[in-house]
Image (tube, rainbow, N blue to C red):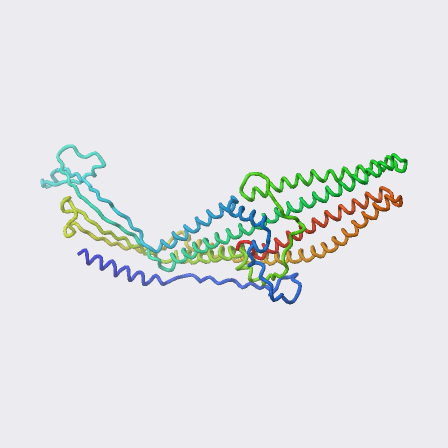
Length: 488
């Protein structure tokens, strides 16, 4: 009898598994994206033969700075947001493993146990002797006129929901898409972290360069003040000349604590990105030595789907939404669950392990067909369709934003380089003006106002050039990030 039940169980399972190939819902298809073959604002019709796709360049090679590379390595290992993202990814991975396990039956073990039944004795209305079953030993047994009976049992039980209509496969697809979305989110966090660490590092280099300029101009102004004071003692200058020259010196002096304050705050911000409390950061680089190679190409807009983690994550959200539609549609159709059990059951302990007398096998099948659910199934399906449409619009919006960011970065970078060339020319002119003014001042052919005006123009020109250089560095970083670089 046991062998026959097992064979029947196998036949039924085989027949039911055969119908699980029916899958409702539409497979995912990427929506049409109408984008041109190049970015708006891109100059030049040809790409150098030896150029490399910028998004595929590893960040270590892109920056090429030992100090910066060490800082980024520390940030990737210790940044708190990065560590949180890793744990979110682990949770998504566990959900994916769980979705795969839904295809297998659950299995439970009933360990060795026994059950005691109490039966009281009485006479029925015909005068025949009978017994009435009472509760088991977990409740208070009768105190007289009863018999008791022990039964011993040991067994295993299983339950299996068949994946009809593709419901379980759609759930696995949704979980896989959610996992991949978390993976892309981790990449996006890394990309943003690399860009922020690099930007903060270059900000420190900029502040150090500004401090050097301020200190150098302060020394130059001190020399001018000494000359004016000597002229005043000789009766060749007025007290007004001393006050205005001293005012200029104080202006230069005030720049130094301002820059030092910004440097300390920026250093603290960088330490926070590195996941550690404020401390001194040793930096050996100089802003003048920073530069990026020019033999890179930007590729085409549609490549952003593979390169940019946030765009890829948006598409995985759309894939998951499409799977949710399949799940909602499958819920409208019948579900089949098989319950089965094998075990030993005997009223005699010495017979429990005698399979011929104590073994049993059970199999139950249940089919559930929803009929009236107060419109819940239809509502869930319609809402799933709407969520998929929203996800599709979000995906298109993310693509448009990504292409816009690349276009903005290229335009900004091109115009900043033009501005930097003009800034270099202006700085050269103002520095020559400072030299000429100093010579004329010592020869008596120029007054103090011309000197301090020339010094002020030179200071503004040099600080402006440093600021433009910093903006160029940030624009390069932004172009690298917007193309999807930084997570390799």
